[in-house]
Amino acid sequence: MIAAAARLLLGCSSSGLESAVSMSSPQKLGFLNLQESNVVGFEKRGTSLGLSVVNVRSKVLPPLEASKESKTVYINGKAESIGDFSDSSLDLDEDLSNDCAGKNGHMISTIGKSTNIMWHESSVGKLERQKLLQQKGCVIWITGLSGSGKSTVACALSRGLHYRGKLCYILDGDNVRHGLNRDLTFKAEDRAENIRRIGEVAKLFADAGVICVASVISPYRRDRDACRALLPEGNFVEVFMDIPLKVCEARDPKGLYKLARAGKIKGGITVSVLCLNKVLTWSLHSAGFTGIDDPYEPPLNSEIVLRQKGGVCASPSDMAEEVISYLEEVGYLQA
Image 1 (cartoon, one colour):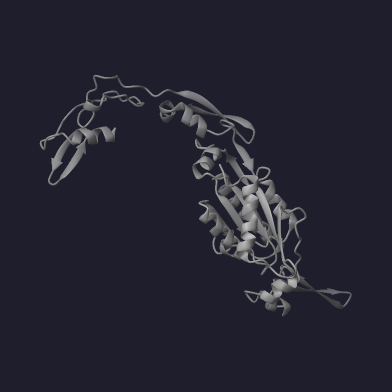
Image 2 (cartoon, one colour):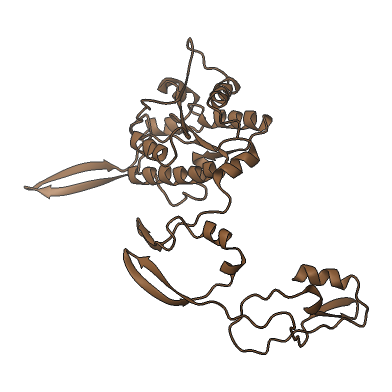
C-alpha cells in the first residue's frame, strides 16, 4: 500500500492530495482490497512531505470481519482448545503459511528440557539453498591430537574451497570456546557437551547449504558418532589426522604438552577420608590432557585418514587437496 502511495506522491501538487476512506464499523477488520487512488492523502510540511490518512470512505468494499475458528493444539500429548483464533495473514497466502506452520501442524513437543515447542519448516528448503550456492551442504569433521595440524589443514581446506567458488565456514575448537562454549571446562561431561553443541551448529550450517569444517580434538568416539547421527547419511565426512603423539608433542605449538608432562594441566581435587583410624587419600582428576593422561579414541571408519608417508608429513595444502578430491568425487561441489 505504501509503495502505491509513493507512486501517487510523485505526481501530486504541493497543496496535497486528499482521498478518502472511512472505516465506520468498530468490528475487528481483515485486509481490504482497496484501489490505489482511494487510500491516502499527502501534504507538504515545510521542506518534507508528510503522509496522512484522511477520513476515508470506501466505496470499493465494505469492512470485512476477520474469520474466527476454534483451534486445538496438543500440549504434552493432551488436546487443549485455545478458543477463537484469528490471523488475517493466513488469508494473504495460505500456501506460505502452510509451509511455515510445521510438519505436524499444531503438534507441540517436548525435547530434552524444552517443553511446548513446535518445529517450523522454512518456505525455502535445503535443495533450493544448495541450488543457489551450487554445492551440497555437509560437515567435514577433522579430529586428532593437539598439534596434529587440524586447524592448519582446516584453513588450507577453506582457502582451497574458496578458490573454487565454494562457500565454507570453519568451526575451530578453540574459537568456539571463546563464545558459545565459554561456560564449559575440560571435564569429561563438559567435553561431551562441547562436541554436542559444535555438532548441532555444524548441522545448521550443512542445512543452510554451507560446507562446514569442524576442527576439534573430539577425543571420544561416542561423541563423534553422535554428531554423525545428527546428519543424513553421507553428509558427515570424518577426517582423521593420524599423526603420532611424538610428532605432535615435538611440535607443541601452544606449549601444552610441556605443561601436561609437568602435571600442570589437571582439573583435579584431593579427597581424604578417615577410616579405621587411618587417613585414606585419593587424587581425582576431572580433566587431563588428551594423549598424556586423558585418552584419545581414534576413529574406526573415517572417510579420510591423513597420515605421514615415509616418516614425512605432507604439506597442509596437499592434505587439503586430498579432502577436496574426495568432495568432488562424491559430488558435494555441485548442486
